[in-house]
Length: 249
Image (cartoon, rainbow, N blue to C red; front, side, top):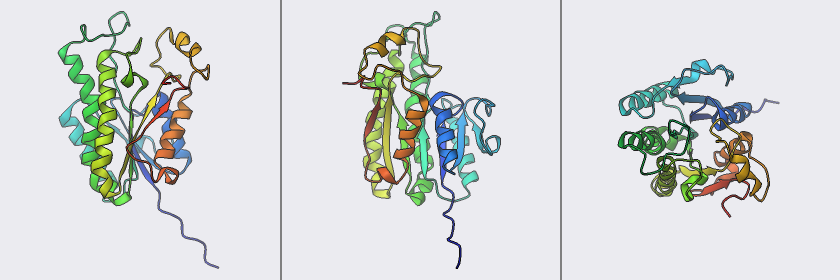
């Protein structure tokens, strides 16, 4: 009896992989046998190790249009015309005041607005457009990471970060409409208070008011990202999934 043929390895490109949700997502996809191509502003992080990690890491400043285009060319070279099954736009930036406080709309400079939107809003659509042929061949899935802060004034997230995430949620719907006829699904996840380095002092007070009465774990977010890139969500597109212990209700 002939042995069953092994399915081709699936591939995901993930931005912002070095810590927190990104690190957990790397582990989730890697454990399922996916090839994980990671992108971040920093070199490959020894704190987020996985098989073939250094060889499949691309150092890129998502806020630099020229560098971003170079990275897209590198991604396409590495895929060598093969399918791309998932693109996870996880990278984000959230500037603070010098004392670590929240940057409101009055205190945010023009350069800070532009930098935040370049990374949090423009990079996801530029990456998806740049990889559209590979995503089309793979009937792939795009997941944009938004935030609870995109739907309300958050006590710690700054104005530029919050508005960029609100814009990314709207962009997700537009992308779902435009990429859908090519067989590409586009969804977003909106995490709330997750146990990562981005947490601000005082988060405990928010957590006390949540229906689930606890902080979220990066692995819980990574699991939902994985679902949105696999068969169980095959008829889901244009959605924003709230992962916040009930914070949005």
